[in-house]
Image (cartoon, rainbow, N blue to C red; front, side):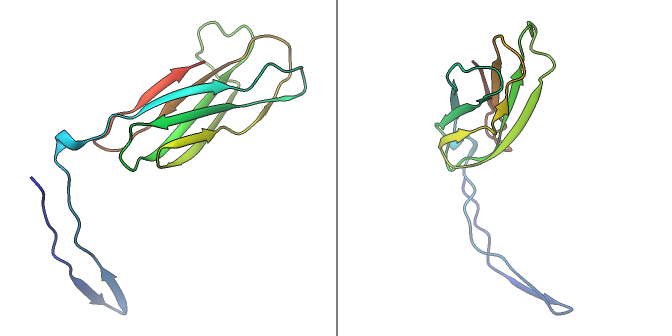
Length: 126
């Protein structure tokens, strides 16, 4: 079922608020977004690492991608050493902020897409 909203104009104490006609999609038309993640190449201590997430399958997706970086020795990935968020504006590739490495070892990124109200979220670890 598609609802239509009638435009209206409200004036109160010099404030004018306008609304417009829009359609509300039925639940069956909701998107199912997916993400895939590629970490930056191996590097040396003191240089930077980052993650690139490709968001696909959305219908004009918005929201946020959150990146958590886990350092060497983090076997449970419960306490990130670095966290950053990127605003989503459509399907596409989104880069995390860069992190300067402080010690040798294997670092692991985990990225998650928040989705929107009524839309799916998703997560990937690399």
